[in-house]
Length: 190
Image (cartoon, rainbow, N blue to C red; front, side, top):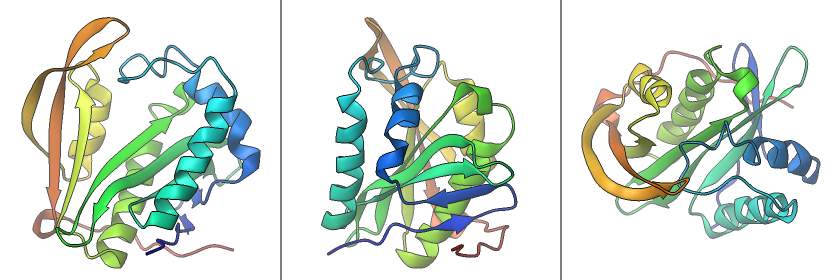
């Protein structure tokens, strides 16, 4: 079952399917040691990783297991980052949320706005009951993003990954349909 990747917009952002033109901004994003400092994978050193990422985005949509969207700032078209759902399970009505933004875009509420837009689409379109997200316990800003959109911290995965050679814990967050509070009207854009 194919899952159509949405095209959405908010007051300040455009969320759209990835194109081949996104390979360079994706590489710049994922090759930043600052951006990737809390990720469970090292910064990219090979430009081909962008092409593989884009291929995976297409594959998860074709398989019907998720959807990732590029995020652009509506005012000037600047690439902000990406947001998406993976591990969509229609039987359990669950999925996992993830996002990654360029550090120049941090602190402006873009992650909160984009994640909220993706969740609004997902709860309406995929009839989700639960969305899960994880973040490194040192990434307090990401935890705040999740809490702002209604996620509840459910527990800690102790020493579940190694980040830059350092053993790290992760917080697990969950958002249930009954706790979801849509607050924006999303309109598909052309």
